[in-house]
Length: 237
Image (cartoon, rainbow, N blue to C red; front, side):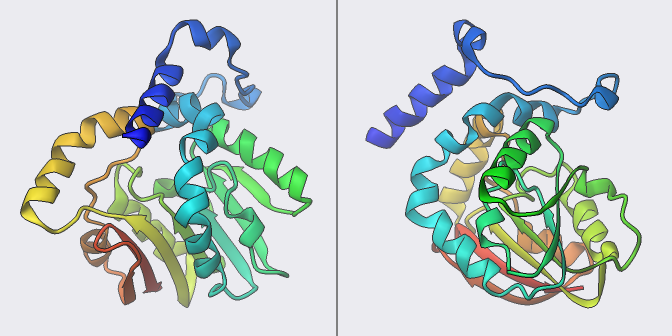
């Protein structure tokens, strides 16, 4: 019950018209002022000022442990992080790694840049869509995405782009929440999904393992971290 009240307060704070007067918003890149902003980017730009607060409980209770576990498996080298968000993974980057981190949302990148500066970690942060990466083929040794492909409009296309920019026999690591493969729970997730997308920008009913198979990528291993809800997925490019 406490969690539901907490989420209700956050929801009201995000969508309150009065509150917008008091929000410290990001300044968009002048080069992108005339660029068309897609709905996914618009959602994340809107919630960027509150995003860390919205995930504070889960971040402290479980997400930090999962992030540390994932990044401990990533060797130094040329690494791409997709969907850097507010930069929550930055503290876990492997020492000596050359990390490029991208995000679709300028609002999220503004927060990531603040975290990069405070941690004194050098990261090449770029505004980019995983569905259309501007990197040449075979650029990276490893690619990582945490809770990202729940928000990508065309996930199979995004996965194929990762396969293109990661070197042959390189690794792709995904930490994702997925649709629970049980009829009743899965149906409830389907019903709740439109509201969750509006609030958080993320789909809670993505079949990510199936999407990976449909993209033609080779799954090395799938670990269940929270029953059937959260998966740590190791893919070979």
